[in-house]
Image 1 (cartoon, rainbow over the protein chains, first blue to last red):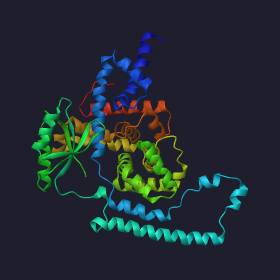
Image 2 (tube, rainbow over the protein chains, first blue to last red):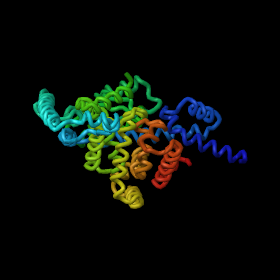
Image 3 (tube, each protein chain N blue to C red):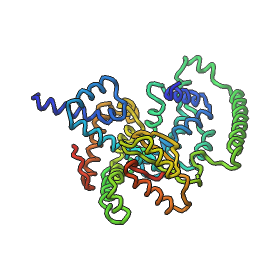
Image 4 (cartoon, helix red, strand yellow):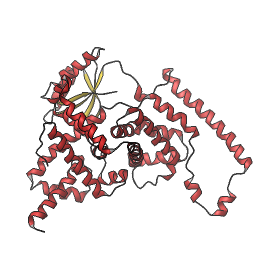
Length: 222
Length: 187
């Protein structure tokens, strides 16, 4: 292999590792190898910015997706009592004699069925009590609607300082409710906003125009 | 107890038919699993059904979890398998064509014209236009923070293939960006 070919192979190997270098999930040996290469390659360094941008937009694209509906969880929980557990562990363990000796009898099966039915009734009553205790109607936490403002996903520019961010949040009557998520994305809640969609859109547009502090802002679904 | 050990403990309790443990796992992971599937299949109703199937499978087969990888990797591995099985009904090439058509339609309305000024919005459209295979690896690495080894567990492919797939996904993203008017100078 010529020197140039060897250099090309090394460059490609390092480029393949860079996404994990940016997300901080490389092992020690690979991280050292990448850092050693970055110290002598401006091209590779420039890629870190591209990867960070890809990461931020991937996080935003995912966070902007809708959430599963409350009805979906209902359907899952309703289907559980009829879902049969895997027998793989019990069947594979022990000798044939042990399995025959411990197999349930017809009478044992009847008692087990009665006991299981009793447990299911008690569990159903307990779950129903838990679900209705606070709200009087069933609603999953992630499906709750919020009328007091609007949620948004926001990423700040690298140069933004904490005082500038704090001032911006005060100015927009907003608070950070979650984050940082991967890529430095935060979820914020803006309280002072009208109920109409156009008012909410206008507020987020004004926030996005603050380019000195805000890199990107998007409406959040929850 | 760290999060990985905590979630492994939840799976153990689920194997012992503890419904509270399943609810806890759902509360933590349902949204991530749903979003991973939704990004691959592109249909919320289908994604909901597949997400439920994932957790039903966890309920039925929690005893099969061997604890060698993380519980999250195991969950996403089931999710990936379910999503890919669903996608097999559609031909990969026709999907790519649909995505390419969607990209080329970008200049047709005022909203899209405004988006053109926003590089971030264009990149998100290009990310959406990637094939499910490329979108899957990008999401696992950038959104789910999976290491090479964890992504290998989820996708059931060798670690070198994980690295190569991510490399090609990024190259394809650059090509789509270039078609949309953004030349990143790479590759």
